[in-house]
Image (cartoon, rainbow, N blue to C red; front, top):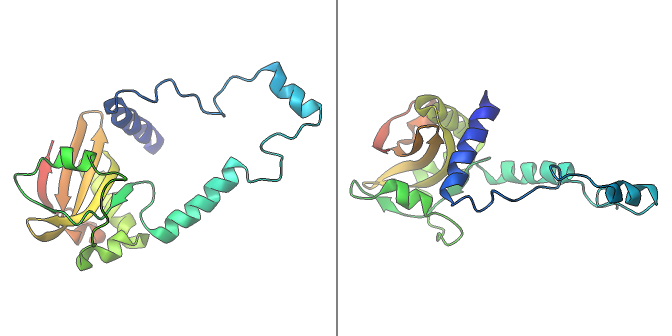
Length: 179
């Protein structure tokens, strides 16, 4: 069930980006040709057997690195923004990216931003409350209060929410919701 929700959420999120990746084929999905098998039979080294890391090994290493860094599987930011009731939260959260300046994480959100059990409890509470896939968070402020700004996607579309740090205790207290 979770995998289906993730796939649906990613499709909805990707669809908004103008389907720019729709034609991309990944190596594991690409059709195999006779030439692929010939290189293995002729003794030529394949990318997986050349002594380098395989994709699964790289994934394991990056997962460990992500766990050390904090939030897993969710784009996370600390923009330093103090959002307000007049802010278009959907547009603001969609606009977060590499160009986003690294701001300071409010002290009240530091444990959440670090990942671990607090973040997992918060993420689970958010997903359960909104029945949506959490795709991005900004550890920032809303009306000067520390807030987890979350972008979620579901079959019904996107939603942006500003939440208090109480989600670390499994309690979802919304400061703002924008469908």
